[in-house]
Length: 488
Image 1: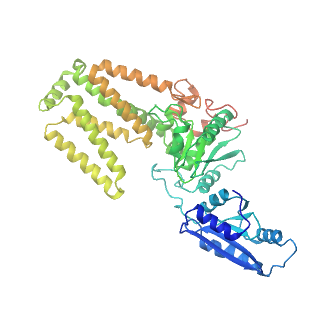
Image 2: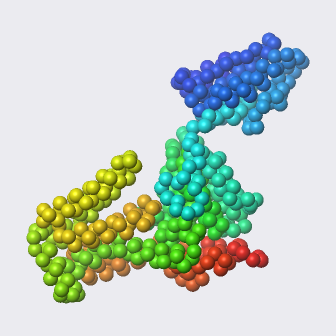
């Protein structure tokens, strides 16, 4: 709908559209016999910016000389005299309210059907702080914020390359959220970039409040529990991914940036791996791979061995286990499931409760409940040990999506081991491997570089090599520019 030429009609229309919201502020200023007005939302705009720059600039025009084409000259004079670095022109009500809600101030001239848009946003987000979900031991201490421009700035601060491109798309019919697709033009695969842009362009949704809203639209296999998109609030992780040839998605009003494509190895790595000696990182990564196997398979393997395949257990250990089990009335699988559920509830409560009280409750809860369950004869001590090891090994992974995926597959191993023993455990393992091999994201297999095998990059992903020997980028992402160092 086109703007009216009358200031009072514009003000009335905006109030009518927004239901006479109390945060709408308007003012008229007379310049000679003519009127200049401005309108803004007090809740998202800064009164100081409006008073210091806009009002002063308008009042300076009170001695404006009247010419024949007065309206055009006054409008142009305003555009040239207002001290503001971000200035645009609009001519309809839809754009007007979008900019009002974004913290802009709209300046209108009576008799003219165009308006001047000025940036006067109030600071409504927190500053740059340390990451809260990804603990930084060594490395940069800054993290992404809810401020869209700050997030892009944190990336540009690290990568000063003109080939770092951002494609901005507006998503959400009501929220009109800014979403930027970032990539390095001469490194990233153009086909992958195009596919991500096309998928985001096709999103038809009322609103986007977090990057998690659009992640499902970018995922190929919605039924898979394993995540194929990395979500991080660390700008150094984002920049490292860009330099490898990956595509990022920055969403307004959220500190979490999406990185595509994500393979299984990415969720086992940590950002600190890039800042420590290769030999030490190699040991840590091996421990993480072992922890992944243990947290998924340990309960199922224990059930299979103690319930069906006791002949595999050494006699001395078997006698000890039998003595512990003699006072427990429930089946082994039931005890494991009950204790696993208890530990998961404690973990969830630890995450949801305030930091000052969450840790103490989880520790006390685990100690008291575990000891009480053993003394009451509900579970045996070995079950507590198995479940505790399973829970502790899952703490090595910070991404909740991968942790939740481990939960589902752990349950599958428990169920099949309860039904068929070691055969069921092996069947679950085969299903697990087949599922991992079937997942792909942006045409990149999930088990890359293990399957398909890339020997050169297998070393970097499993046990890593010194930084001065990482001369090539991963070719499974793209081969436009595979040189990390040296001549192209």
